[in-house]
Image (tube, rainbow, N blue to C red; front, top):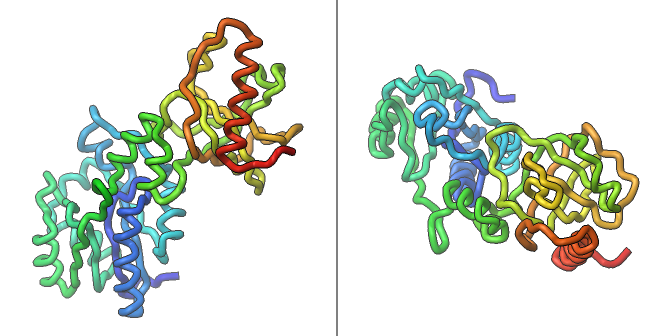
Length: 302
């Protein structure tokens, strides 16, 4: 437990998705913390600042707040401080942000940010201003270059890739498979009638969802990991209207996962959604989807 009077190293960002760029930042902060013998605290914001600053253009969130906190801890943070980003908080000056977040809340000895970090009212705070203002308060500020491959590793890039169904490329930026967490709920039970019972994942509103289609991936629930063929869409074969995320667990029968928390991870898109001329053609395609998912996931025949 970090005591309120302990000095810390603070790493600041929205950290939506905690992708490879964020992990580069946290790695740099972790080294500074270890060298200084201090704990590392990641400072993040909830809700996403765009909810307050650009309510007409709120980006889909890559991860829930709980997942973000877990990912930041996994990446190396000793603790996570969540700042409630309200309309009032959006209007504080850069100096007020430093006094509140870094001095009063954290008693920071060092602060680490990315070179594109902006803070305070109208995003007036720049990394150069942070360095100057922090020095006046006895805090050392460190600015880390944006990490990239062919393009910057960013939440915006991940959203574009996932929205297009390019989950393999998104995984390269995330450093892991894109996933969604939620609760397994009852659906129409049509899959059970057709011989393909599915786990229907209900997620929080506002989360990023892959393009409609069928995917190979994994379902984590009840302490187990199941290989799965995953359908995302409205089920146009049966004239559905509600977007659903449904996972068929390969070679597992009789599972009762209702009301359990679960995670669905997307490995590869197999095809887009389609409407078939007959039920038998639809069933034949489902069988093919399962075998393709089995191949992608390297799951041997039962």
